[in-house]
Length: 202
Figure 1 (cartoon, rainbow, N blue to C red):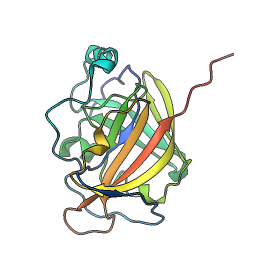
Figure 2: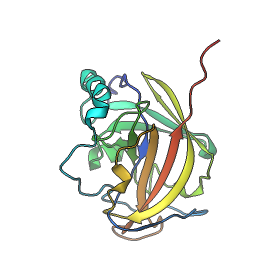
Figure 3: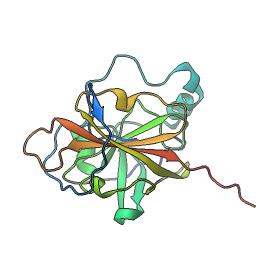
Figure 4: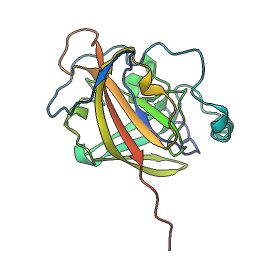
């Protein structure tokens, strides 16, 4: 499949491979494997995540003319020695190719919550082995953005708190949970990371 140009904007990223409404438990998972996955995102609220405070970022996003299915860039996870492609959209078509970017969230490098989702039996099968402080590096035409993991949590599949706006640049990864589960998993494993400030060139 032909790759489209990288998106030319910055954003915070949130990898989301499924989200739900309900209580959550803050936990740190040490060892998990993958299995089949299906629905990775919850039903969405009618309002957009982009508020008036983020209009400038939204205008840049619109100017880039990114369409569903377009190749946005790639994410590297040094701790796992893995690099995966990112596509616009979180439907089955995009998640079969790689990681999907939730279209109602900002793109990597932009101040707000950038959400990425992936299947537990493919691109995100090893998320459970990550640790606090591990890095997530997102590379797009807009630049290279490094995020540092600060939290893990498990939520119900319909928990929409995963996709809410944030005041700082955040990257969120989401995938179905438990990793070992037959059928549609009832929960989501969430990874949250803060954008690491870039050091000005001397």
